[in-house]
Length: 94
Image (cartoon, rainbow, N blue to C red; front, side):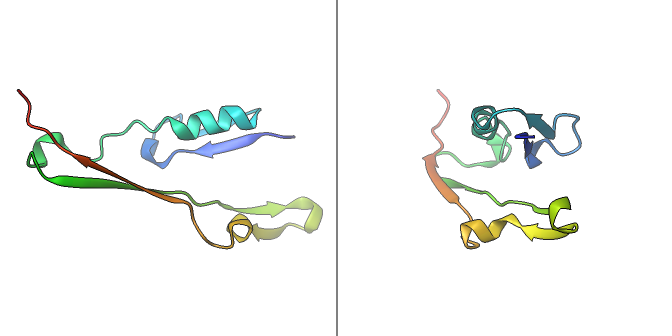
């Protein structure tokens, strides 16, 4: 059907945690819009270095055309999950 399902774990428990869209572009846009507080800002002392690590993984799916056999989609990434580490420094509020 060429549908893309995006599960956004930062929205767990909300009705929009699993979103189905019709195009790859829409799926990429959903993945790019992660908007979740990682830690209460007051808990981070100012002037120190911090980082945010983001990792992606694919689900295991069942294929009717293959007698409902399971296929772990991570095999296409050779089990090398995309990761990004973003450094930042909390600045003191004026």
